[in-house]
Length: 138
Image 1: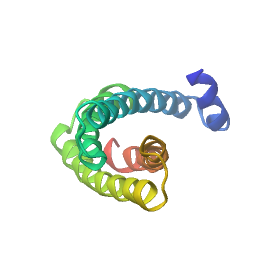
Image 2: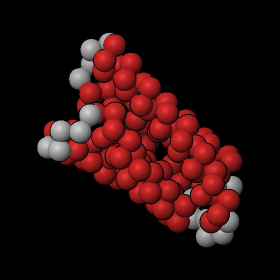
Image 3: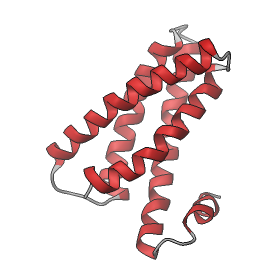
Image 4: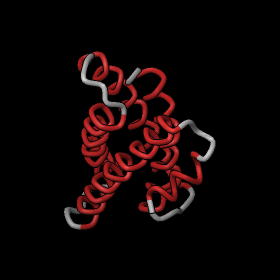
């Protein structure tokens, strides 16, 4: 299923980039699952406000994504500190954007928080591939 999804978007990409994009999608879905689960568990069972839950979940997703993308998707074994700093900068931008969009979609637009999270994560996922590939894991 993942290969089929990636194939729709990557038909015109060179083979190496297609493989990398497929790995990026797989790593992203893994981080997405971990992040979504932490958000849901904290919000529904621990009764933590959804913005605080999202912040904690985002840390889980960050480390999952960082480690998978660094070592598996982009296969970069050097420059750990540089990549960590750049990724942390992107992380804090994405966290602020995520919490802001989540609040706007949930509280102001009245969308259920999990659907708002899904919409927000899709947007972040989209711009991150370009930023990772061009600036962080080059």
